Image 1 (cartoon, helix red, strand yellow):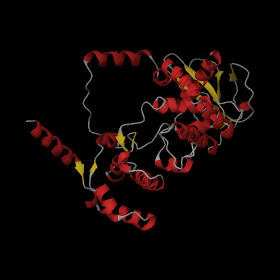
Image 2 (tube, rainbow, N blue to C red):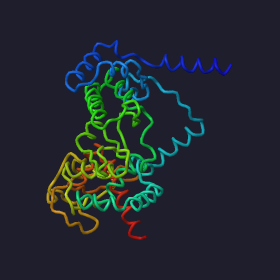
Image 3 (tube, rainbow, N blue to C red):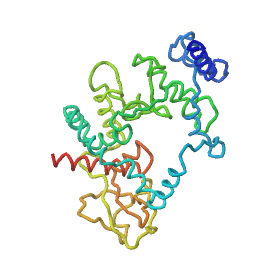
Image 4 (cartoon, rainbow, N blue to C red):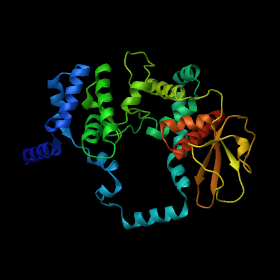
Length: 341
């Protein structure tokens, strides 16, 4: 009986795997890798002939009207509770309660303490405050506890060659990932990451891995699953995207009313402060550069902030004002907690 179950399990795996070498576009991609980067054809055939299609990853990149409906496995009580939660809180409050938790602050402090020597060296070299680096790792992977369970090679192959809205982007990421497997000497089948193919504690896409990755522990390899390399690579990412050492990130501002519609908000639009009539920082803010107006939509009112150049730099990591604000607020809380101890 046990043998029958084992055989059925193996057959299931075989049925869920796909031979991408039968795809003309994949064969062209393989030929490119052979000609430009000296890959062995036999090696590539072995890789691409046994790919498990990552349907969950693909679902996220299909146009909304083409996504198969997912079965809701929640109980009626859970669905009811979720509806009550959405009715009680606005979008920012819901986002904040997930990303800036007391546990994440506590764990961030412990993470800084555990790698204080690395953080000190990185901060001195790149000029990026350690609490912001820690906050990125906290938001992305809970300090390494959740780096992702998707096989990166299979995921990127799926997203590169199964029709979706970002095929071109993922084909480039697959190329970069394969090149990384050469330079960093790893088996592409042994790496796991996010549903989009992001890798390591800071969740770098392969192209960013190549562009910003740092071998900070000097072992001859850039390994973003290792703390030292991940910490330095995030700092390098910020610095190369324009981080200004010693400058602030954001401050809350006041305005008249409960909902703000007077000026365009968002990280893409910048203003001289003198242009913004009726808006003022709630506390002294020594910053002379252009600012962005960042609006956080809460249940009862809009919360408004000035975002400095460094706030914009955080949005280069993830193109979301809410993401950047959660990183800023988590970093601020981590720094405050460090001072208490």
